[in-house]
Image 1: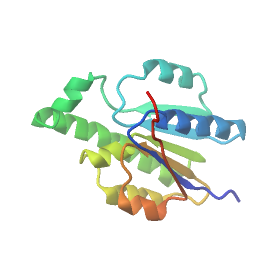
Image 2: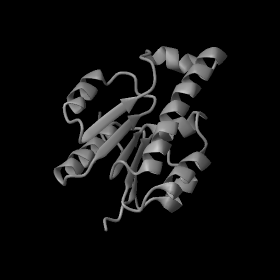
Image 3: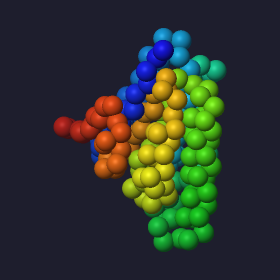
Image 4: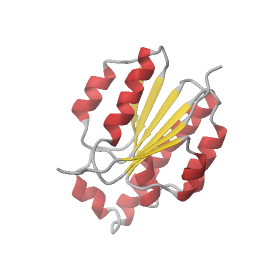
Length: 166
């Protein structure tokens, strides 16, 4: 039986999503099913349109409304907006838990989920719980700017992406 892994791609630089998508592409090449859920990512519509062509083998989901970056930054100060984003993120996270519970894919990409922990929308313990509940055959890939301490212990592999020149 296939043994899944927990992988983390983090850092302030670019490329985390691209690496995760590359892993997903490799997985569908091996006849595995991939589900990608994007968190706090508002401006990748061209990327998503391309990935949608890979359905049903590679499915991508977003639960957040389209917003510009300044609006998202204002959520720290605007309680109503913060609650709205919080609700959207929790809908996405609950969907991720459903995917884990049903085992409907071999690879689950949680793109930007670590930023949700960094910004206080999710607790580190919630990520740990989803990791513990995953079926043994399932890979979970998480991306974001930070690396929560509790995830370090649970991860099979951790990669920090650092830009040397931009």
